[in-house]
Length: 287
Image 1 (cartoon, rainbow, N blue to C red):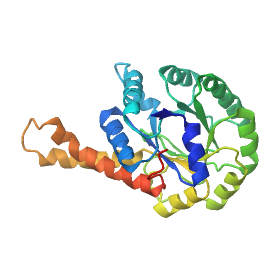
Image 2: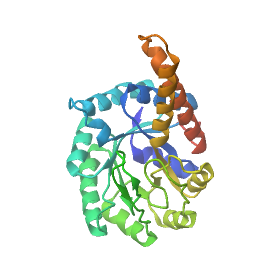
Image 3: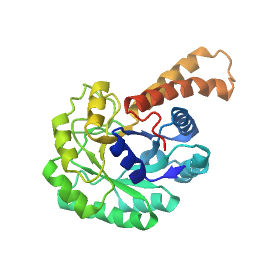
Image 4: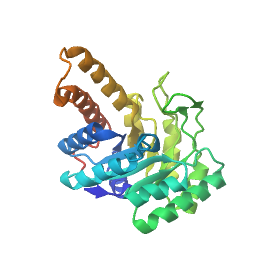
């Protein structure tokens, strides 16, 4: 069933767990993630990045959105259809028009007041449609998806959190406490004391970006201290790539059946999804 980000994160904050948020593309990822979450009775946030939606034929937005919306009612767990890391209001408008139940506007590279203005504009677009809005305060760095640019983290400051939420009306706030996007070159060291300060003053649930590759004990500690949503993508891609390499070398025939090509990938992907669900305490939390 389709729900909003505000709904699932309210329950996560009240019951001290985090909802897994998976960036995904194509049927293999969508079907495997939803099937696994239903088996584990876990709420899930199905995220999409503009990079994955902008296909050559121009239909990526429609295909991805229509697929998730079409199958959502066939899964008896809360499902959020969420746009990840939009930086332009036109992208927000497009997602809302197609039926996304949640969007993230990322003004984290902007000065505070400009971030506020951009975020408030996104909230004004989403609110009449009943959609939720996530924003980012501070900056989560790391490599971009195409590994062409790298940026350093800027930690979130507690004295800005309350002002930002009050002035924008956002439903969730991504904070920077030491994670990075992409595949880690060195293990992160999360600033849990900073997180405690942020959670103490934040009127809304907090989000952790860059969850892939972060040591499990640090993830558990972050969830225990206020993180209600954890973004995951790189770990899924690593699992799928490993399965794909194994599949290609294992088949001798030139025309293997699709089920034989895709099954190892689904199996490895499902294993990662199950592990993340348990790590975040989301198992059996579907309501």
